[in-house]
Length: 187
Image (cartoon, rainbow, N blue to C red; front, side, top):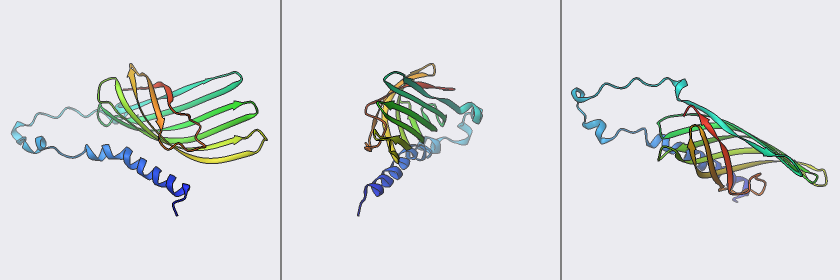
């Protein structure tokens, strides 16, 4: 009764809830909020405009030779708190080697938590459309869910991270661990 398709859909829904849970959980009032009398409240700092809380960036990489690999991964996010940044991204990946080629398109939703100023935890749920030709020239199309979880280091907008694919779909274009170099501007 539990087909791989149903399992993938369940994993996708659980992953989206996992990404949204910190946003819901940290929006509640604390005891300190209720204990402060109105006469003791400090003036609220002016709220930063929406456009100033946006972050942009992504990853780009690849190499050419007997094996060709090109990856583009633009991202945009919103700094909810200085330590919490959810966002979305697009993905394109091309790989070819010895008569085999692959084009991958997709979208992702991601979340970064900064427990320290430069170190962050990263989770990303990607839904990819993999188009490839096997060695006999037959074209195949497969939808692939990918759940990447890991950590990284970022300084001056430039960062590195290591990620692991928790779903491990056999058609995933990634072999774990996944290393990414890129960054976010506006953070």
